Length: 111
Image (tube, rainbow, N blue to C red; front, side, top):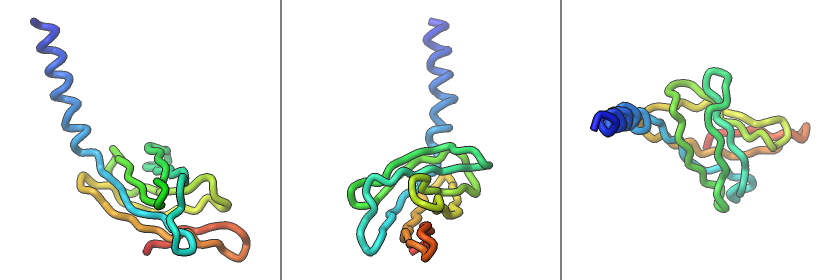
């Protein structure tokens, strides 16, 4: 019985941590079309905390456990385009356009 109580206590303590994970969602487009299968990295305090991939239509949805200022990056694109985002307990939408610069690198612009 004591083990059951300890398991229940552990679940109760971990459950709020999942509830407070901030969800970041949105789209990434290039030339008006969604960017499929783009790897997304979200770094908070300089450490990559979350990875994700865009869907076929360029949409993405990732949970970020850390709150505050973070950076969303597309590491597989030239120039490693990135943008500052903010994670909070509430879902946040970030829609980006991937733009190719004259030097061949890409940048992310908010839409």
